[in-house]
Length: 441
Image (cartoon, rainbow, N blue to C red; front, side):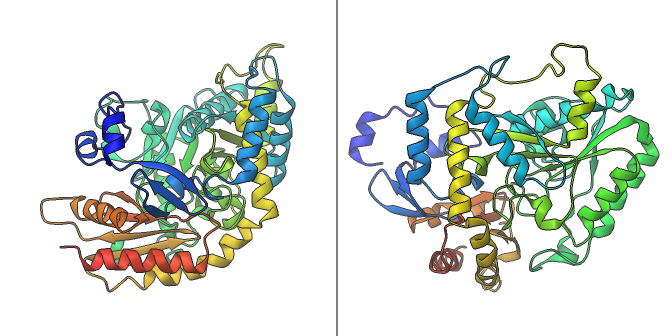
């Protein structure tokens, strides 16, 4: 840190999330401003954002149209409760998102984050089965290496051990599918691996052991992002859809990362042509500017819950800031930017360039695997003996010093540039990361 911030900031009070706090506060990295593809540090250096903030700034940073919409809304209506009261922008936003969604996912429930979206979707699934007279359907099925946020529901269906180990048994009765990733059969695949569709068939085993009348929902990420960009094998999602539909089990796609352009389409469900019963989203809905999330449900699910409830509150669930006016205004402006600047189409066109640049790193030192889908990719490194995660951690620090912001999880380097990226940005990302990899021990 520079002298000014050393004198101004006391770093102790802030307990940072998903951060090695002791290590950070001994060598802090601070970003003071950003615009477009670039962040600027406290000492004036520019850093190219290769991870869209945290998979969320799809339209880049500080887009003037989005910033203006937030400011105008703050000066007009700062807050309106979502309980028994509404405001016009949130209804317009819900209508617009429903129109973007595939098939009949026309019911939009607003939240404030991906974690809240996941817990909301799980509760909707349970309420739906209860409303239709199948209250025995209480089991939820997640997947190994899945990430579904940090609520107790999301942690329960998630499959990352470090996220679960400190918090007890979590929700009872939760089951897990195997991960879709197999290094021996899938390493260095470009896009979707050809091997692995049969891994979805483990759901048949789960159904047989537990009986379909006990299972409410299956939740998966179309591709698993936070665990290292694990791409679904060809035919895998289609197989899950087939099995869940046959047994009356709801299929939930966790699209917190994939929705709003990451795969060159509004939703991964559209990109893969597989329509679930519920979709969770967040992040790109406002391009990361104001916290917001949503759950999209089939109209038949909403109708079942509402039509079978007394003439009063039908679903006892919601948040103080559901559909917040500033978030709603930010989302409307963000969707305008996506449409007017054709960012989803731009992402689809840039994806092959990104794929080629990423796979060109295959021969760099310590590279174990490279994976990609749309504008998301991963470079997995061989771990240092007895030091899991250390090699990627070194890569993160070195990349930042060289002016590149990446994301690491374990020994996986994740990349997800904003949709406004150019081929020149992609080239810079690959060249800088290549230089970092050349210097790793």
